Amino acid sequence: MKEIKNVEYGLEKIFEGAQDFLPLLGTDYVEFYVGNAKQSAHYYKTAFGFQSYAYAGLETGLKDRVSYVLKQDKIRLILTTALVSDSPIGEHVKKHGDGVKVIALWVEDARKSWEETTKRGAKSFMEPMVEKDEHGETVRAGIYTYGETVHMFVERKNYKGAFLPGFVEWKSDYNPSPVGLKFIDHMVGNVGWNQMNETVKWYEDVMGFVNFLSFDDKQITTEYSALMSKVMSNGNGRIKFPINEPAEGKKKSQIEEYIDFYEGAGVQHLALATDDIIATVSELKARGIDFLPPPPQAYYDDIPNRLGVHMKMMKEDIKELQKLSILVDADEEGYLLQIFTKPVEDRPTLFYEIIQRMGAKGFGAGNFKALFESIEREQAKRGTL
Ligand code: FE2
Image (cartoon, rainbow, N blue to C red; front, side, top):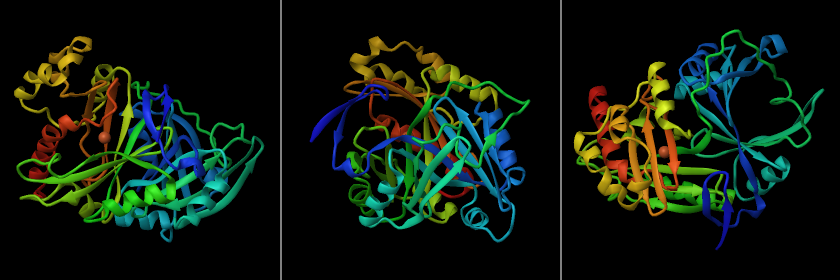
């Protein structure tokens, strides 16, 4: 396998697999189907610092749905809600609650992306569709991945507008400041029992991804519960999808809790990158975001041991990290700082990770135990452990 460089995303060694049939330029947007997009948009603006960006709804000629697009640096979220009862959007929300429907991927050629993936076995969600307005045209096409989640291919090389045809600029008088979130580092999918290897194979065969990291249930286990995880990446390393499956433990795996409440496979968390996690997390806390409680004192006492040679390059004060309950992990190439929110809706399903990479390319494996014990304490409160 050939190694390629990707400086912008801090990845120097991502393996080039058989992705030539599906070159991906990056994440284009993530679309959520929600019960009340207007109120969700207010939450993402107020609490997470997203900016009003684009809008489509009754005023733009839509009859059955409304979509708000929010932006922070490179991250674009769409919040979509149904306006009528007879709607696949409403059906999705009825079954799953608020959740991620579409992970959209920016491509050079959406028709070819759809043809190559459906030819390899992907189930179509939407055949290639050209959309036009005065700023040019886009082509979009979609395929199903795990559960009812969709990958949409977005081709925008002939489009000069801000977002997509059909959307107008969303101007608002209410503009809370951003909190320093830069781009989506990775997006994690939870799948049901015995579905991980099938899903991994699907990403290899259909999308040309490679499995570049794996964690088995011996590595991701606490006294009570366990899970397994495999990280899939496209060739340039810009798109990383870890896939989780529950594993047998004394009590219920957090992945199984997710599957029960989401009623199927779906997106578990979005990891959003910042280059100043202390500032970002301080701001998010001040704006009412709930994070998982901190691990015990022993975890912070042990940080110099765990970081080893990377300790001397660490700029952050451990006491300050502890005060904010930020976790620290290291690999051969550096360290990373991360923290996880509690679920952002009433069903214990989707949550967010805030991550700052200081050279490390892993996913915080050294934190799994501390993190999962923290999640289990929350599960116990919900009576679902
Ligand atoms: Fe993560």
